[in-house]
Image (tube, rainbow, N blue to C red):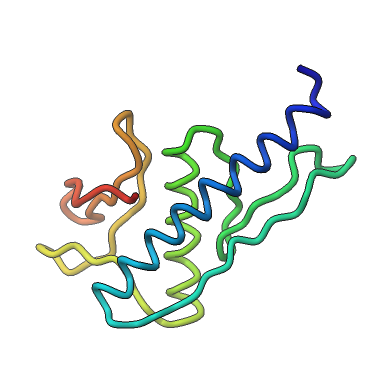
Length: 124
């Protein structure tokens, strides 16, 4: 398949999975903090200069291809946006009360404790 046909499909794939992740994560934020927040998934269509287009969640670009990588990058972007814009550190490890780190694993995107290194839960 020529890049001119593949690139728009990849851009739409990234956008759809990023939006799915952000929607699920914002539901979790509200359930855990009581705060109803918004975080747009920004996207630009493919261009000659940027044939894949761009997808961003907060300040972070979403460049993955596998859904678990896209979910991880979207979670990182949302986490950065909430910290910078809303001064909200989320999510927290229930055992250590420190911020979790979004990680892509063979079994999917997960939140990992930054102190204990244990997996706390899935991202989506």
